[in-house]
View 1 (cartoon, rainbow, N blue to C red):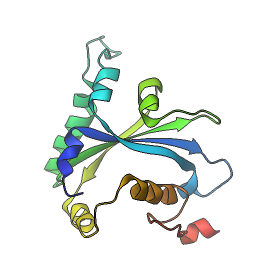
View 2 (view 1 turned 60 degrees about the horizontal axis):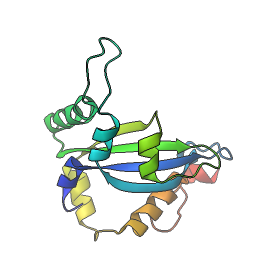
View 3 (view 1 turned 90 degrees about the vertical axis):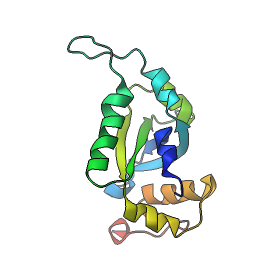
View 4 (view 1 turned 180 degrees about the vertical axis):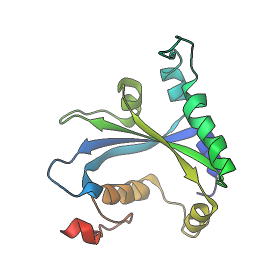
Length: 157
């Protein structure tokens, strides 16, 4: 996280699978894949969106993401990054980019980027995709965000 400005042009897309074999809320979903993608994919997907109220065209990125970024800056954050997740049906196979293009109801959440987070992440060397994806997988499986699966105490019960 040496350059948070990439959050202005990219977002984190995540595909998930429901884990029906657990009652642990930290492991309700397992990671199918994750990818950093350009925001232009969303601009293309949502370019013909209008409000249900008056059918006026809406810039989805402006309405949800840029407004959140301005709010976060007012709250003392460095900015905001967009994370979107898509649940895949059992047996459904698609890339994150395909899920962004084809899935209709994504879950998306702008996440604040704060100095404390940036400073702690700067203390570790930059991680390639294979490293952070494994950490994300372990976290979604109910463990800590780490390379090796380390269960949280609640995950052991």
